Image (cartoon, rainbow, N blue to C red; front, top):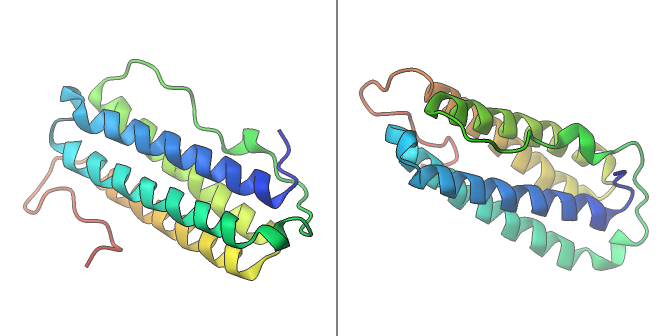
Length: 155
């Protein structure tokens, strides 16, 4: 589906962040997640925060959203693979793929959105998804001292 309006772009982003939050929450409760459960739980919380930011932006930018045309943005390019019954390493790979797709979407959407405040928000979320992907990639290796690491935005 082509995302030609501000509302469609943010609606797609909200839908994807909600789905990611649910997937991370389910993975955090899955016994196959092992030592990654806390990492997945933290990611679910982060995704819920993204939903809140995006919903607030959509509410606050209502007047502008009618005037902003968007072109050459299709959701198919950014949809993650459908979920299946996965083993632990596959769960992690799926999460990494999801973050990579989200990062690409937010970078492209930020360039095309036409509203500086919203573009800044999308770039911020893109940065967080890139950071989350790196943390997840660290989870592929056996945990050393200190575990898989904390999210770079957390101090």
